Length: 389
Ligand code: UD1
Ligand code: UDP
Picture 1: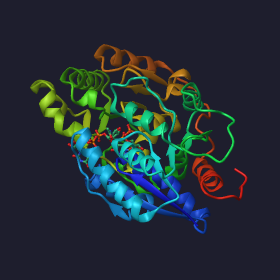
Picture 2: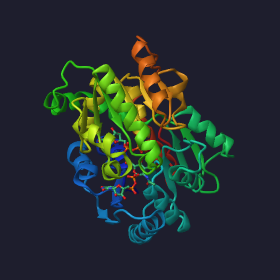
Picture 3: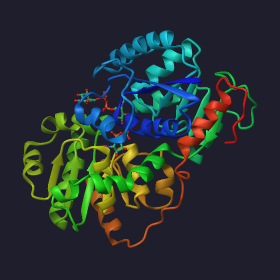
Picture 4: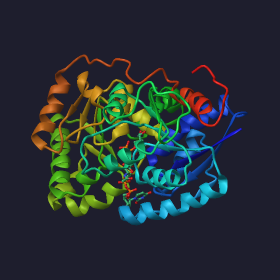
């Protein structure tokens, strides 16, 4: 039995982990034992527990209850906690997702005591090291043993950074193996798509049935923490909604909710709060989010995950950042990088509204990325028998 220790902490990681836990439960329960460690980076009920309840993720075996803090204090507390658990549990490998501080803490703790790292969502790059996530993902990739990239671009980024294509097993931190395997979030979106429609009523309770609406999310630190940028984003959203009489639904990340009154002008803050066209919601569940994405006419976001889900559900997307790791979405024309520029956001909305058809090619695998990852872990971490991937 291979023992795998999964680190989760932030909302998108909890959701991503559902795909692997499901694959293990359905097909590998006699071969893989998963121990789940929640760092506690996200802790509000609607940022954490809600996903365990609705996505059938096993209850975490450990919760470090780290909470919020500066990058250093938060990451340091997680490293200490993860190291203790690794020394006690002695897993065959650790599984890390994405690019958060929880990912970085797991990478530092495990690489120093030579626990092999499996990095899911490897190779993604924004080429902007002012983003904390870019530091986290680069550091994690470069101490990993098995690296699973969801996209060809991510795989090529790794080759460009010196990873080898045809190196032979055994794979180690010094001889890592890279894979292009599709996206576990595509697995999840396919799996939960119908369930979301059956189990949620967010569309009807918000009176959105049959109405075109924009789904918007904003939580990147450079957008929320810089008043000029936050003002530009909300001013654009407000103007678009009034001028086009279109509803905009905004599930607010707690970071954004806390900074809205502080960083918007008092006029705009009041206008956004009282507008009949803007619905500010608390963070919604993943099934509710899928329902919103499926029914929206357009998405505006600075989220990595939401950009992709817009694509999965065939919706045009305005990216509220100056770059993206998911360049394929932009290349095929269904997403535009616009950044926090009021005029350009309004222009992009008009352009997309006038376009009738979009191209959504298959870019993210076949919905079985998690199965592939499980097989590869069994093949290359600590076991001699090869299972056809
Ligand atoms: C983190 C990730 C980011 C990811 C996002 C997903 C890092 C550096 N950033 O950003 O890559 O896109 O998660 O959502 O790891 N807060 C609460 N309740 C919570 C969680 C957070 O109120 O349950 C508030 C706190 O004020 C906290 C702030 O949100 O200080 C930011 O939380 P943090 O986890 O540090 O970063 P995120 O912005 O969530
Ligand atoms: N999400 C959610 N509820 C929300 C907002 C987002 O369930 O209110 C989901 C979303 O569908 C996606 C993931 O959270 O799967 C994205 O997380 P987030 O935007 O916080 O982080 P990022 O992907 O940018 O790291």
